[in-house]
Amino acid sequence: MKKYILICVLFISCFFMFVGCNDSSTKENEKSLVISAASSLTDPLNEIKTNFEKENNIKININYAGSGTLRKQIEEGAPVDIYFSADKDNYEKLLKSNTIDKSLEGYTIKNEIVLIINKNFKNHGDIKSIEDLRKIKLDKLSIGTPETVPAGKYGLEALNYYNIFDNLKDDIVYGKTVKDVLNYVLTGNVDGGIVFKTDALGKEDKISIINIPSQSHSEIVYKCGILTNSKSKENAQKFLHYLNEESSKKIFEKYGFNY
Image (tube, rainbow, N blue to C red; front, side, top):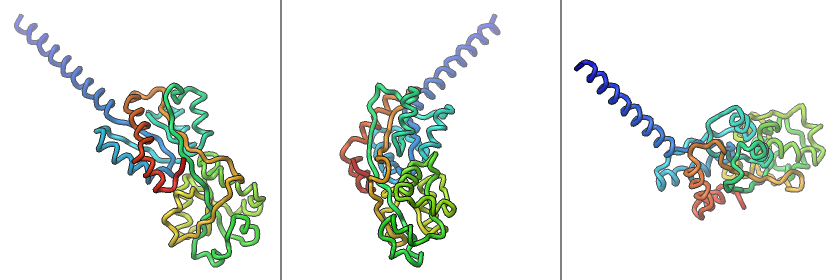
């Protein structure tokens, strides 16, 4: 009889330990967020993340990559709470499939693309516009892979708009992210590239920055939303509201984004 009572006591103790651990795990999940964000958002989001974590005691993990790559990861089941895309197309694909919760408010910011030329390129001073690439040949030009990197898609549109792509297509180096393209140019592995303006700012000691007219490509709109299967929707909404606060807007503007 004593042995039976002892077994019951041990069973009940283990049960409550399991429930307690499970409850602790659930609370831990409720206090954290996973964000998949375009690599061009690295600098402002890291700064905003630090401020948000201090003020809200919520841990944020951010996975940076090309927007198309992140979308595919989410479609394959990656556990993500918030998706922040550098274009409308990838975002709307998830919206149409109800992967992003349509009932919850999203967030939008804007950007621009620019042509950057390494200042060690012998004719860098003669390139004043993207159209100059017709007469001044670069050994290598880099853009993001258009299928997965929005900056690459916009860049390809601009090259086609000015009828430049066919002349350069054999000399194009594709990057997995816009940050890759920037690094190729900064290190001199290629002579020039097309990146977001926000990536190029502050690097003027190494590169020339040439604006690309907005009529040459699709409107550059970043879209952010909460996933339908997020287990931390309340905290995700807190973060999106935080992005709308003046302090966060100033950080985005500091890095060259606009509204």
